[in-house]
Amino acid sequence: MPSPEPGKVRVRFAPSPTGFLHVGGVRTALYNWLFARGQKGTLILRIEDTDVERSTEEAVTAILDGLRWLRLDWDEGPDVGGPVGPYRQLGRDPLYREAAQRLLGEGKAYPCTCLPEELAARREAARSAKPAPPHLCPCRTAGPTPGRRQAIRFCVSGRGGVGWDDLVQGRIQVAADEIDDFIILRSDDRETPVYNFAAVVDDALMGITHVVRGADHIPNTPKQILLYQALGYPVPAFAHIPLVLGPDREKLSKRHGDVALQAYRDQGYLPDAMVNYLVRLGWAHGDQEVFTREELIRAFQLERVGASPGIFDRAKLDWLNAVHLRQTPPETLVDLLAPFWEAAGVDPKGVEARDRAWLAQAVPLFVERSKTLRELARSMAFLFAPPAARDPKAEAKFLTPDHLALLAEAHQALAETPDFSAGTLEAAVRRLAETRGRKLVDYAQPIRVALTGTTISPPIFPVLALLGRETVLDRLAQVLESQSN
Image (cartoon, rainbow, N blue to C red; front, side):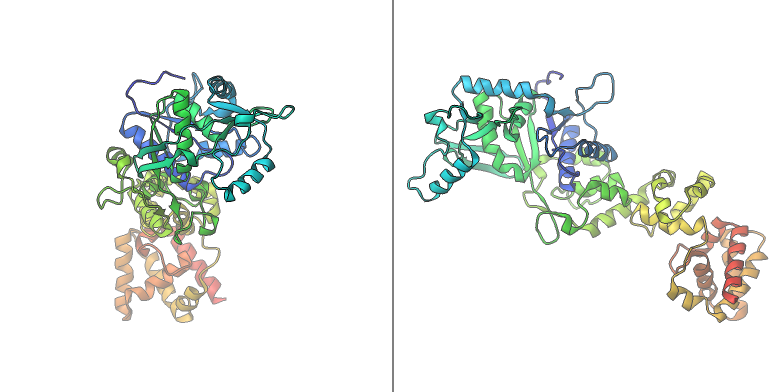
């Protein structure tokens, strides 16, 4: 691991690979990333996988894939000569044991052989005792019980307060006598370190200057400060960002809908839109809503993160994603749409058969009405094949015998139009409508329903021009034939 550069900001994102990458965790990663980039500092990715029973490689892969999809890159890792990988706690056990032995040798920790049920009974008795015992574990004074497996417990000393000036929450103070002696190494075969201890050792050895994490970690911070002080490590600055809540102001969970980052990727949300949306869940820069990454890096400050929880609003995300879709170059959207064609009922080979320039010309017609890439692909599906089914209400209203007669007239007018451009086609159908004493919409809607299957589509004449003479005339003829039988 490189030696930290004095005075340089160093932050870390340290997820536990025990489940999917939650949008709340993604926002934590994003705030660390923005802070590091804005301060020209270093972002470290550390996988906290000491919980071997619950940690999975599938979860590690999901974390890495999610961060890469969002383009939240990190700067350091153990790999040399290849892609920068994350640090893994699982291979750092000797460092934790060495630190624990130092605390033991200095009388700042002690071996504990108490069984969980014994401590539970003492805790219950302490609730009614007056005065309450200062410490629950008898091993602190009586020593460990021979023949039992030993854990290592940190010795909380002093009666003063443990406090810090949180960069988000303000001053937080906890009385030291409210913190009982706590385990730092478990009594299992691996002498597994508990979260608070491993995090402190790693943050100190990695030179972390700022710990930016969720407000649910506030109860851990007093214990960690005591460990920093006992080990003689500098105490980093802490910034506890507010949680992400559902619309009911309860902690965001599956009952509120999708909470895994992968679900939003699979539904066709753009990485830049997710980044833009999540950073605004707790942070503001005036009244500005839409940001590029470069703007976020320049504007983001930890001190401007609010202390109140952010409320996840799916409608707001949809709006913001639609804005980013419209701002994305059509050529880029052509590439981004590739994973969504099949789910939209489009044969990917049919898409591949089309010229990229044609696809890039088609996208702007449809993107204005789409909130996600999935919606965009679905709305464009009829370009590649006639709709498999039409909206029954649209068909009943606009493919009646009277409308089919109008459609037949439109088919003839389109066939006789030498220039198959949008403007020429619209002029031809408009002349037809005027000749028959009709409105343009009387012809346009049957054409739209016949070709798209619905009453909602982009302006129909640019669509006709895009489909081309042969395709339009052939599909309209098929509809006329099928509806007349």
